[in-house]
Amino acid sequence: MTSEHPAVLFVCSKNGGKSQLAAALMRELAGDDVAVYSAGTKPGAALNAQSVESLAELGIDVTGEYPKPVTDEVLNTVDAVIVLGTEAKLDPPTGKRFEIWETDEPSERGIEGMDRMRLVRDDIKTRVQTLYSDLTTT
Image 1 (cartoon, rainbow, N blue to C red):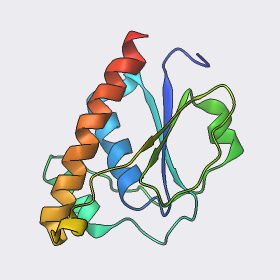
Image 2 (cartoon, rainbow, N blue to C red; image 1 turned 90 degrees about the vertical axis):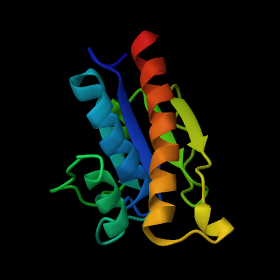
Image 3 (spheres, one colour; image 1 turned 90 degrees about the horizontal axis):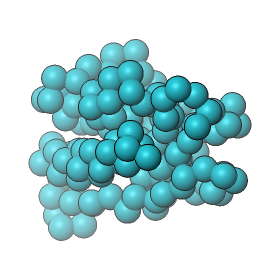
Image 4 (cartoon, one colour; image 1 turned 180 degrees about the horizontal axis):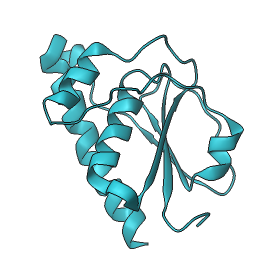
């Protein structure tokens, strides 16, 4: 461990949706027990409005968050790197836990809008709970 608490980086391509969802859900669950970062391989201009809304439904406020690039500084800080979805391409950093979460994509089943975003959020939330348990019991 690099610090007193485990640290995790969630990555997606734009850092506007899935990685922000995962980071916000982990912060909500872990409090100060896990240091949480999110970044994008090709950061977008803003957060996905539906992602923000789906978090607000759970009472999670992400005001002040914005898309950020993946940096060596953050990669060197964290214990685990989680890539959400298949769009973002990132080489596994040496000596770090590395996972690719192929998240649920309801749009492939014709589900769009907030119904889609809630399903994506809930899929990520389940995975975050498992990851939290792993990070805090090892």
